[in-house]
Image (cartoon, rainbow, N blue to C red; front, side):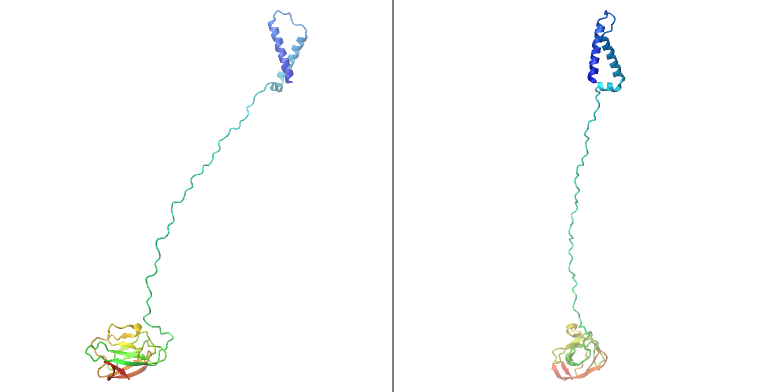
Length: 243
């Protein structure tokens, strides 16, 4: 269809040009050319009256959408924050306790006998003028330890009494193990070793140089032994056996 129309249009244009150039020409007669012109005109009318035909004759460029590349935002990795605080170890080192428990100053008496054969061994009557070293010695002649806590040494002449603190007398009748009660404070006292003090005023005679007696009571108040000492029968100067 396109080729035919183009051909008829070209022919029509050519005839029109020839007619314009020859104005003196006689009036047109019926000729094949006139038929051609009429046919061409009808074609033109057909072509112009049909919009689809005109659209087919002319190539109208259409806008073709072009893919425009759009910039896609890219996420740039940022610097990862790093912790600046460094863990520090504690500088305070725990110290061991400085308080060292002290040994007990007395011997526990639970489960130990509180009665037995305890005797007065010696009486130190101190014949010199000082009288500071007067003392009484006890011994345990039993076969078992005996708790003498609360026992008492009494002087019948003066009425003075010494009461024992918490202490256990170990067996030893021969005098190798003794419990000592100093009448006056000498500075040699040691409760752990069985050396006690009566604490009576110094230079005061407690045990007469002429002899006397000593009484020993247990914790219940019962008399355990009463003995007498004679300055004429001494174990050492100033020390008399108590029989």
